[in-house]
Amino acid sequence: MQKMAQCTRRLIVTLLTLGRAPLIVAGTVLALCLVQWHYWLLWWGMLLLMGASAITDLFDGWLARKWKVTSKFGAMADPLMDKVFYILTLPTAVFMATKSGDLSHAYILLGLDVLSMLRDQWVTFLRSVGALYGADVRANWSGKFRTAIAFPIIMAVYAYLGAGLVGIVCPDWVRYPLFALELLLIAVTFWTLANYTLRYWPYLRKSLHD
Image (cartoon, rainbow, N blue to C red):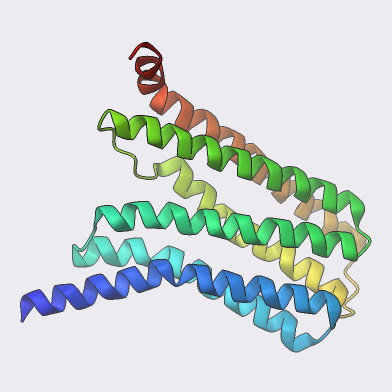
C-alpha cells in the first residue's frame, strides 16, 4: 500500500513537471491568436495558462521533497521545462511587441531572447562536460532564482502587451518599470551564466587535457 502511494505521488509530481510544457504551448498559441483577434477572452486565457504553468514550477519540486519522491529524471526534466518556457514565450513576446508597433520594447525583448538561448545552450554544454566526470548536473540555486523571477516578469510583459491589443490604454510611465524588470532579467541571466561557468570550470579545464 505504501509503495502504491509513493508511485502515485511520484506520478503527480512528474505530471506537474511535464504539464508545464502544454500549458506554455497553449498560452503562447492564445497570445498569437490575440495578435490576430483582439478578444478579451484570449487575453485572460493566455494569462491564466501562464499563471498555471508558474504554479506547476513552484509546486513540483516542493512536493517532490515533501513526499520524498525526488528523482534524477525530475532533476533533469525541471530545467528542460524551463527551457521550453523561454523558447516559446520570449520569441512570441517579441512578435507581439513588433505587431503592436512598440519597436523599442521589441528590441529589448529580442536581446533577452537571444541571450537566454545562448545562456541555455552554454549551460547545457557545461552540464554535458560535467556529466563526463560524474558532476552533479542538477540546476543550482542561481538557475532556480532566474526562473523564479522570470515567470512573473514575462507574465507582466504579456499582460502589458495584451492590454494594448484589447484596447486598454496604459499610462506611458508603465513602460519604464517594465523595461527595468526586463533589464534586471537580462542582468540575472548574465549572472547565472557566469555562476554556472565558475561551477563547471574545473571540469572544462580537465576536459581540455583528456
